[in-house]
Image (cartoon, rainbow, N blue to C red; front, side, top):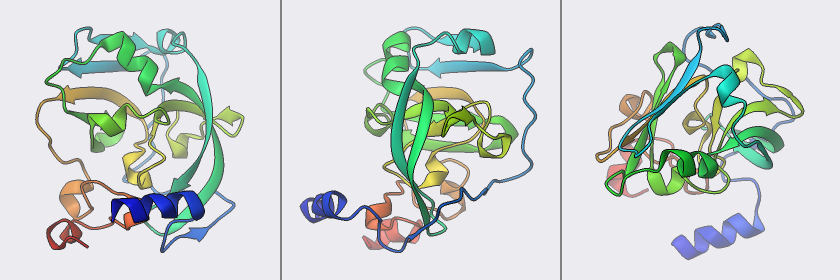
Length: 201
């Protein structure tokens, strides 16, 4: 099964059940938070050797990277060739140094939104904390000033308005994951809903 999925990834760019769009629809839980650079901070906490707390200017001094990747929303649309700019998670983990017992991350965002990831997927080379999209600063409705980008998973894992990344030994589910969404969210396997976890669909 895993091998056949990998072949699909190589041969077909649009996951099953998805429709390609040119625009970038806005889907959010709750109102768009306001960004105040004088009060904003970003923290990495939990099971790391070097916890950090950075203000906006300090965050912008971190190594800058760019990447182009596709975006797949669980509501059945996909957008190809998004240009993201920001900080690669692989560079961030070099700074904070997760402890061996850190197996998961829990993402805290402005507005109360949360999501969860296993650490091996969080540190993938294509995962980043982005503040620019397609050559412009992120639109506030798309997560300004900071959005997690996890291209291999459905878009609800690419959390908007990120404030805290917590490294954990045990997994706990985030906002949508406790409300019926799949705990993993692989678009190629159409892992949309939590009932699929029990059925093996």
